[in-house]
Length: 527
Image (cartoon, rainbow, N blue to C red):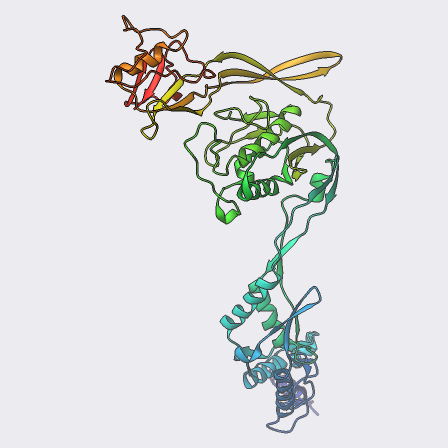
């Protein structure tokens, strides 16, 4: 009997048949299992959220689509009754929610959450281990412009400018007052915080939001001033301003000057520290008079007095002076040559801190005096004494002004002048047992001319007046002085005896001579 033989081709066909049958046997149950997992055991047409899904921090896992909708609507309604407050440093700032037109798109949120449920927690995600919790934010809409407006109003309440560290001076000692870090509202971050929190956490949100602020770091920190422990020099000058406006200006000046810190390598400017001199900055502007005895600094001399006190303090500490100007005339509150004139526009007082440590300027009004003191690290540089030396002098001229309101024999002194002179200023100090002296400046002050008012004078009487002055010189062959009235002029009268008359006319620019003046024997007549 012959055995039946199966051809290789036929054996191959049977293998394919059994393979296909085996795949179908495995695949169909697997697909059924996938459907059960994917739909969470729900009946046909019912959507179930996976356990890992949350909506605005509300757990909806295992719930149907409708159950999740109801839960979300309840949370939205609760949030509508919750007050929105931004909080900073324990202080709450409420938001008027009724003006925000705040709305929640529940349906769009549920659809996205369900899509994420299928995407992140399906069969293959479980198979691959990717089943992390998912929190789907609820979609919201609100009036961003209105929220920005309300946040801006809050910002105006809470914004705090930075305050640099400074020094508190008591007598000759100083203590450091730490800086205050300022802040201002960060509008965009506060808006984003509101949108993110309210859309992501309806579960247990209390309505409070942290107000986002941006720090304003002060320019001078406590560490910058830690070396300022010693008083280096000081100067007090008697107050020389008049009236309430002058005092107000002086107070404003020392207030702005006080607490100024000059860092190493920095150049200090008096005008920058105290100006500009405007009403907006608290100053009372005073007109600049055409008077040689007035210091023209727009503040009735107050600015020059404060600058003078600082200038002398700088010289004592032997700092490098970059810019300084003398007054037109010597001032009453200090020796000539030691003043520092400023005008609020171009004339400034500037010095440079060429030390390795910062300097602190203290300024105050005490006992009717302007006090300026300089504090810093202890230095090996000896403090200088200021010495002034007066040089050559120039006598004033006498200006005779014709006053038509006076009678022919009347005259009086309108201004008693003073001599002009030069003055040099020196710094003097002792170093290693040796006295040293260094010239600082040399200034020239023009003479202030005498002014005498007289009654109407005729031509021939001018010479008569001039020749009655002892030492007066005649011009050419001048006629002798007339001592009696001949009917064509006025009686001769000499200027007051306490006004010295020059023997020659001055060529000084401040003589007051104009095209309407005439010089006769050294006396200047103004018609």
